[in-house]
Image 1 (cartoon, rainbow, N blue to C red):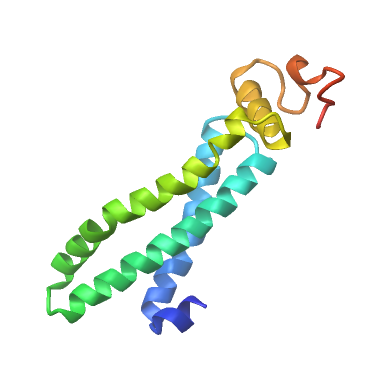
Image 2 (spheres, rainbow, N blue to C red):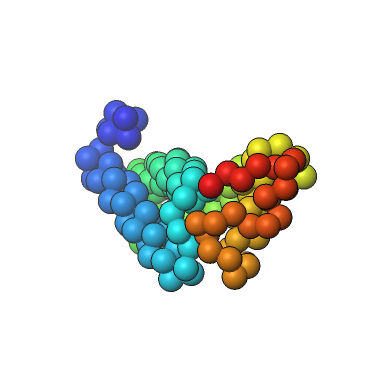
Amino acid sequence: MILLFLGNWKSTIIIAISIPLSILVSILLLSALGETINIMTLGGLALAVGILVDDATVEIENINRNLAMGKETVQAILDGAQQIAVPAFVSTLCICIVFIRCFFSLALPSIFLFRWLKLSSSPCSPRTCGRELSSPRWPCIC
């Protein structure tokens, strides 16, 4: 699909390389922090890959637009990155704001989120349920 929209093999390869590279760095960072790969982290990685592809596509299109205006390659890259920095940040912030509701909800998403936050900062094992969720009201979700 990226090749269809961009119409350029070089741009498609750049985006295709950025996806596994970002996932690899994310997994290494999770490993360094002692986190496990679970539903929350896989969901976050899926969301992040979608954002990465969108932002990379916009960035490459903007660089190509600057190159078509006759700018040198380095200047086109710098101008292209500067021109979409604020819009990319605002769109990412809007996506993050959508998930703030999970913090204030008593539904299932907040249970997963609070469980992950509490288990990541507590000494109990990630494979066992914390005492805070083993009440009759919130059954264990292991």
